[in-house]
Image (tube, rainbow, N blue to C red; front, side):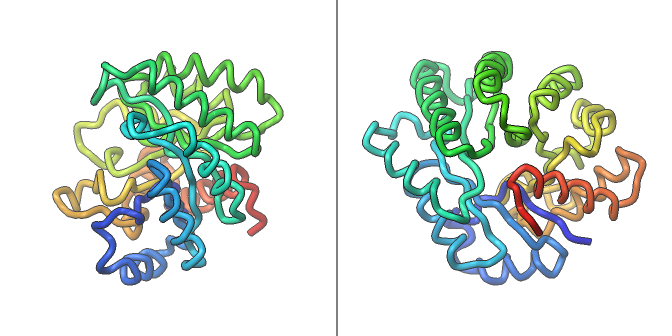
Length: 261
């Protein structure tokens, strides 16, 4: 079984001391590709450096909503430059977060639109962060998709926060939904419903390491090696084997990023 972790922050300092071991542990568990998103220019640079160093790592570059106050116009050109790197597969982590901040919504909207423009100009998919902002974010995405309808698969909604109705709407727009550690939590009933009812062809696996560890590792640092735990829970919810989950979710990601093998 081969898996892909579509969202892991291996560019965080919490992995500085043992990154080689973390990556090897993931590979030993069948996680043969890992995508590291940027949150700002500095972390995007580091994601690209990691992708250059490790064969199993790919990068995404972008500006996270929590970092928009530190973003200046002159940094946009560096994001664009980084996005042309051959191992950059997406623009992200981008989006809106009205849970942690509501006082800078206009700035978040402005930077999000700028990142969408970058994605459109380079024809890259997007990795979306949404926290208590799914309605306005979906409206923006719908307009973006209308203008970029030629893109067959638009990106991944990381740590999807909505219900089944919203899930259907976004998958129809060409998005995969990211299933991570919270799908293993006993009380995550909405996530259980979503990931049992949507097609497996609309799901991507992710850890969000070092955050959101699966149930059996809660309180510990999350790692890409825990992807099989998440895959096993998806298999239970979908009523299929973990082998099928590995095969289909990997194929979904290959299609999204236009990987040949």
